[in-house]
Amino acid sequence: MSLEESIKAEALSLGFVLCGFNRADTPPHYEAYLDWIEAGCHAGMTYMAQPNAIEARYDPANLLPGCRTVISLAAAYPAPSGAQKVQENQGNIAAYALLPDYHQVLKVAVEVLAQKIAQLTDQAFKHLVCVDTAPILEKDYAQHAGLGWIARNSCLTSPAYGSWLFLCELLVDLPLKPDKPLTNADCADCHRCQMACPTKAILPNRTIDARRCLSYLTIEHRGPIPHAFRPLIGQRIFGCDTCQTICPSNQNQQNTSPLFDQAQMLDPHPDLVESFLLTEAEFKSRYANTPVLRAKYQGFRRNVAIALGNARLEAARSALVDCAANEPDGVVREAAQWALSQY
Image (cartoon, rainbow, N blue to C red):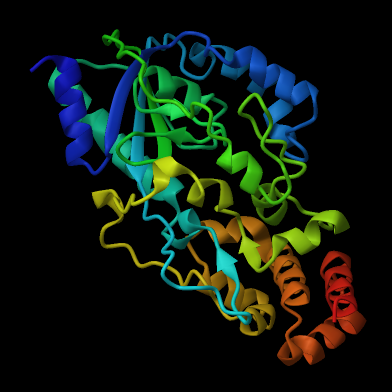
């Protein structure tokens, strides 16, 4: 096998489902990223617009001096089950967050891959592992490495695995032969995700206006959620899978990566009242080492309060009344007051 084929074989043996190579050039959609920032679509994610981040996304060598190849990797996670209907007393957590924190799982696996490459090449080389948090336009590199295409909902979508994918990268200063982009896969004239998006956050250029996106608002956003979007949240308490579940490319995709085969999964539909009554210590314990902690205790309770208002559960009224009167956190207190106004 060639070195590239050997690396791909090692990646698959470690539990990744896709692997491809790309030259460490400026990503094709870099200008679109700048326009997205200029339009303010990054909302409160100020780290996306910092000068050093903008510079790093222009050239991977700004992350790893001498970088010559971006190795793109993907791990699949289970799609949400459509068999179980969410009951009125239950919340909904996005599918990706039900597993152990992918940042930790993937970082370990990519570091092992770097060790395997060192054995294959029998030479020292520089490398950098990037798992989601690094300033790199990872979907661009994944697309041009042949892993999939960037769908209308902005998700990297694979013919074999749909968009239920975690992406990560291994930057190396080795010259590896680049793969070719897919040429026969696209969304064509399908606009289902745009039509299904509750807040119409999907833009015509296949980017997302985070200011309207329920995933951003329930995970990254730290203040009050705009009133206009609260009824549209429904019973979501962390993230939103609507644009993925509606996508034709995701129908009947039940694949997962060996990396997560034995992972303990969270309850995707926790009881709303119980969730609202969790102490901060209980919240941190229940969701330890999972992406749900990203919302923080304040954001989680804010989300649950809004979901309770949308569900109008009588069983939650006393807890909401107490919170609306005595909660020291202003954001959570206001969310509880709003929830009560929906009864």
